[in-house]
Image 1 (spheres, rainbow over the protein chains, first blue to last red):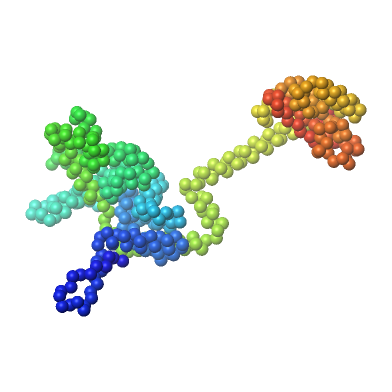
Image 2 (cartoon, each protein chain N blue to C red):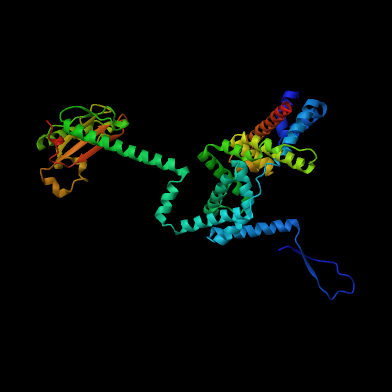
Amino acid sequence: MGSREFAQMPSGAHDMALAIEILSPVNALTQTQTSLTLLIERAASGDTAAFEQIMIHSQQRVMAMTWRMLGNEADARDASQEVFLRVYKHLGRFKQDQDFFAWLYRITVNVCRDLAKKRQHQSNRFTSLTADTNEAALAVTAGQEDAEEALIHTQQRQLITRAMATLPEKERASIVLRDVEGLPTDEVARIMNSSPTTVRSQISSARKKIKIYCEQYLRRKERSQ
Amino acid sequence: MNCKHVQELLPLYVGRDLEEKRAQMVMAHVQSCMECAGSVDEYRETRQLLKQFAPPPASDAVYAGIRQRVLREIEQEAAAPGLSRLLDSLFRPRLRWAVATALALAVSVFALYFIANRRNNQQQVAGSGRTLDVPTSPAIRGVDVRPVQKRDPVQGLAGITHQSLRRKSSGAAADRSRSTTVNSTGPGSMSAQTLPNENNTSEADAVPAGESARPEKTLRVEMQTKDPNIRIIWFSRSPNSKFSKGT
């Protein structure tokens, strides 16, 4: 329910009462939180329809996070499913004063860790993600500026995906939460069940490794041209 | 601040993860050092690249499929009987090792208890007239178990009377040893005697008055621990026990 404000009426139109409901971004956020809180309460008491609404609210975040952690769509789908199952099982433990999405990220990171351990061949799966965008398929033809731009974009995406695949699991999780999801370091530390100092060290190491990987890749490319 | 130190801090500096004081020092250095300024630009470019680290857009059908599978599993679990749910939760990957360890520990403890009990029984059966080592408890390690000869009730009474008189005169130290049948050889000793009930003054509470007239024997084992204040006394009414019939 947004704040209700009365617009300035033109003179001579006093008999026409007009109420305009304006949803400012802050109010919209509060509304989302309130509705999410209600949905959580209902879902915790076994209302699966409410839980489906929670899934709809959060499915894109969960899917993106699992993909970033695991590197391929099939695993990301399996992990997302497991995340929602765990969320449903542990909704009773969720405290209303907690940030739901931070709690959700924590579960997501744990599920991805478990799944990665199970699969063991995570790095291979990461590489397979980039197989569809191999070098030969990305040959640039002259005069196709849009295509060239799209190609650069794809190459960059491929490069960063490969660079991320080289990172250890904890460093990848930390940098995804900090640099991609944009969470503050303290929040990342809470999600990772770690200290801010450790998270800072992981982030520093990850940024350094990504930079070095990109430099080496570009140097190799320059030499080959 | 030299370049080496600044280069170490740059990954955190570009993400504004350094505390204010250090960030200002790095900034001052970067403004005067071309090489470090170049590194800052490179870090910023790779951070920009990270924004492209996103999954290919998934269709609504993919999300709907995930939701359906989740809801189906929730329904199945809700319909599952309580026992199978408990077993499921016990054998989840995280708990599997804990459950296995607990089971292994329980089996080990039971096996140890069983072996120790069996050994004790064997020692009691074979130990008539011999000194036995009882290693079951550190508190009574090295304790002597001396099955006491079967006594004549009168002899027992005489012994008790004699010792009781002696105890009265020996003061508080002797008072600690309330037993009248001790073959104590000092701390860490243990003795066993078979006594008629009527003569065993210290077990008056344990034996009903009506039974005292019967010629039933009581096995009494006393253990003096290293601590002179602690003595363990064990009674057993088993007239046919092999132990009590020791020589």
